[in-house]
Amino acid sequence: MSVGGIATGYVATATSRQEPASQDVDLGKQQAPSADYVRVTGFAHTDLAIERKTKRFLETIVETYIPVTAAEWRRDQPVAYVLKVTEKQPSCRSLRRRRRHAPRTPGRR
Image (cartoon, rainbow, N blue to C red):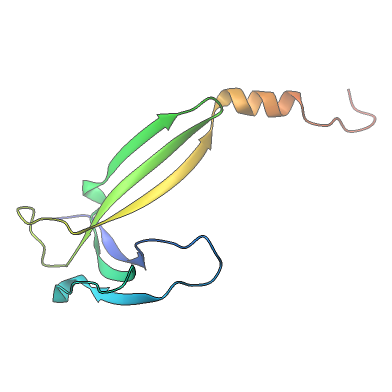
């Protein structure tokens, strides 16, 4: 039994607000994309996700990689698409620094 969910989303994103020209790819049909950006429909295997943490001075960057496959995919088959989720978490040190330098409310000590 595998845990996961249906994933539909962009494999890559553009830096502008304009949606890039893209192609719909259904992983169940084993299509090869012909565009630089694709909209993928498949199964997200959250139970196979890999997480990587990078600590920097005032934050921790957490990158999670989730394989996205066709519904009938088996573990002995290769994975063609991986969804990358990036999250920035402030460190405790940066939270203390923000509190220390926060503007004071008049009338309060």
